[in-house]
Length: 423
Image: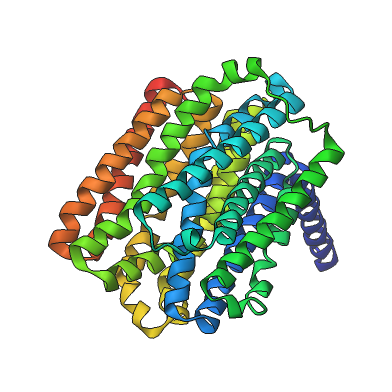
């Protein structure tokens, strides 16, 4: 065979591979995954620089107060979501986009106002020294930030439900402006940090509403038929998600009580760094749920998602395992002590992503009871093992608990999927 022929053959195969890549990107599963991934990468990157700059410009006390305020807002928005972030995606094709989105936006926004006011009243009753109570304008800004965050969150989920993940990416682009606002607001102390977040949530929420108005009629009406259809699904996912997220929220005070403040800080940074590995798998998992809700072939998309996750996950684990120490050093030399924990968390990523891959499968199949049971098992195992192993092994004990919990969940999930025929 002549060399020119071989060269032509190689060029032809290369061209075909490029064409196949572009064809793949036209498919909703991959296209939506890419924009979800870019949006999350942008959010994580902006968040990283936000706290890095805040730590340099503001004193430790201001950063601590701002963190508590921002965490409170996130918790309120989480409580106010009522599982609509899941039911919107699952029912948008069944109940109609205007009915689903108007109902979801209206109820979650109203709920955020009620829960936000209740939170402020609780501060007045139990924490009289709070800055929010001393200055009414701070309290109003806090409540406005809660509402804007809620609108930002639910409209972001709306873009996912509409398969307009490019707009989800643009929404997060607007939010990334919070980094720049840290500089002019430094004179405000802790509320400079919180104000930067609040202002950009307002801008991102207004942007999202304007974009949605071009796509549909926003009348903020409530469709009772959609509520009746989705109640079991929404409430089940709400409980399931609460069980899934709670251990991460409860672990800092548990570590603080068992082994101290320094270890609690190491835990937080190690977890924050390890989650960088899960951004791509989580994006593919979310895209799998979206496409499955639109009636796309579930088994085919699960296999595609699994291959894509492995393609991204393996090099990410290798890089983070060997260069994680350098990443931790960015936060400060003290945080390098968290490297052993980071190594265990990184190696656990195979088990974690497999569990997360089955969440959209169960949502598409409407197996909400199974999802609640799985996350209840995870909740009990993770908290129980963490409490025992942290007391015996220190901070690394949490890493062991994390790996054991997700390894056991993998065995349970594979066994149940074969038994129940989920795929």
